[in-house]
Amino acid sequence: MSSHLGENHRNTLRQITGHPTSSNVEWHDVLSLLRAVGDVTVEHNSKVKITVGTETIVVSPPRQKTIDEDLLVELRHLLRAADYAPAGA
Image (cartoon, rainbow, N blue to C red; front, side, top):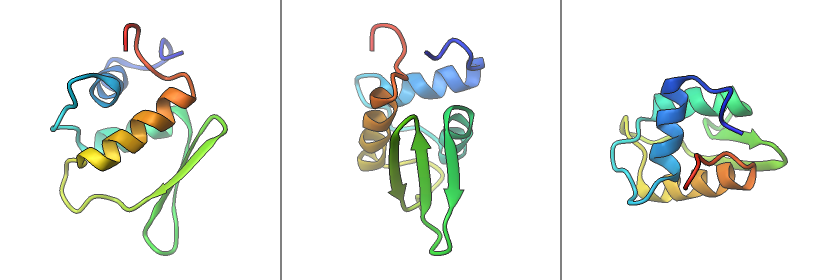
């Protein structure tokens, strides 16, 4: 399902869904990918509402430029539930 994504989005998707877990996934790359595959809304409380397919999560944006492992795992579940996983992941 990721064939319509550009190379940068596919790389970010591989970082999120791959094993071992990557520790260098940047938030701005994640937002760009999520906007390409779903809907992203910043709520009044600064939380970010993300909908991909029929799945929706609400997360707090990271304070650093990279995301932590807990957020990465949450995003991995969201993307896999919407059939966004590179071949072999």
